[in-house]
Amino acid sequence: MTRQPSGGTGTIRQLLERAAAGERRALGRLLSLVEQGGDVADEIAEMVHGQASSQAHSQAAVIGITGAPGTGKSTLVGHLVDGMTSSGARPAVLAVDPSSPLTGGAILGDRIRMDGVAGGRAFIRSMATRGHAGGLALAVPAALRLFEACGYGPLVVETVGVGQVEVDVTRTADTTVVMVAPGMGDAVQANKAGLLEVADVLVVNKADRPGADDARRDLEHMLDLGRITGQTQHWRPEIIMTTATTGAGADQVHQAVRTHRAHLADTGRLEARRQSRIHQEVLDRITRHLDTAASQYLSTQPDELTEALKGHKTPATAAAEISKHLLSNQPP
Image (cartoon, rainbow, N blue to C red; front, side, top):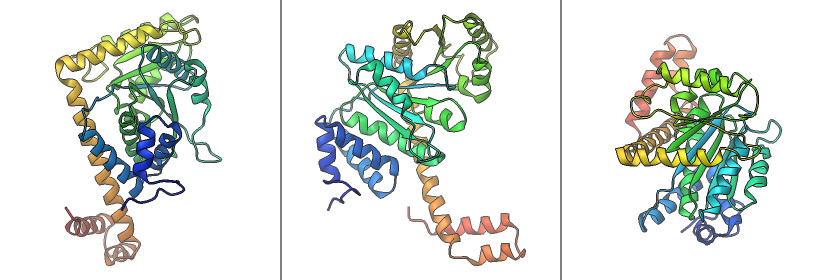
C-alpha cells in the first residue's frame, strides 16, 4: 500500500501522475519530500526509476553553473533558460542556495532574478544547503531525476562556488560552467577552491567593466600551466566574455555547452560521467546508512564505547571493533 506523504492530499503515485501531467504544485510538493529525505524520498526515487525503466529514457542534459557570489550567475541562467524555452524546450533550474540563518530554508533572491528574465516559463526551484553536505549530495540527483521524469529538460543546477559542497554538486552535471568577474580576484579564488578542476566552460561576466580582459588573461594562463587536472588532455575549456545584465554572450555560452556535450557523446565520456555519478551516489547512500547505524549503536552505550571513555581502549581500537560489529550485522 502506498504511503501518504506527510502533509499531502494524495498518494505519492497520484502526485507523480499530476506532476507528469504538468501540475507545478504537485511537482513542488514532491521536490519538498525529496529534499526532506528519509523513507518517503526513497519511495519517490523507486517510483521515478520504475517510470523511467518503462519508457524511452531521454537522459536530459544537465548543466552546472557555479561561481562566487556576485558574479551574475542567476541573471545569466535566466537568459540561458529564456533561450531554451524560445527553442521549445522545457528547462528546469535547481538553485542550491545557502540556508537562511533564521528559517533554515533557501534564500529566494536567485529564483526571483531568474524568473524576471525567463518570464516564468521554466520550473525554477531553490534548495537549501542546510549545512548538510550528505543530505545535499543525495537530494540533488534525486531532484534532477524527478524533473526529468516529469518531462523537463535541459536541467540546470546553479550553486554558489564556495566550499567543497558546491564543487561536489557541480559534479552532478554533464557540463559545468564556472563564472568569474573582473576586479574580484575570482579567477584566482576559483582556482584555489578547486572549481577550475571541474570547469568545462569558463565565463568572464561583466565584460563591459575594467579588468575583464585581465581576468580572461589570468584564466588563459592557468589553462596554459595545465592546472585543470585531467581536463586539458581531452578538453580545453572555452573562455567566453558575457554581460549578463544585457544578455550579451548568453547565446555563446549555450553553444559552448552544446559543443561540450557533443564532444562527450562522441568520445564516450558522457556515459562514463553518468556512470561515475551513479557510483558516487551509491557510495553516498552507503555512507548514510552506515552513519545512521553507527549513531544508533553508539546511543546504546556499547561496551566498546564505555571502554574507550574509561581510557581502557584507544578511540581507534573502539572504532575498529564497532565498525567490524556493524559490518558483520548489516544485511546485504
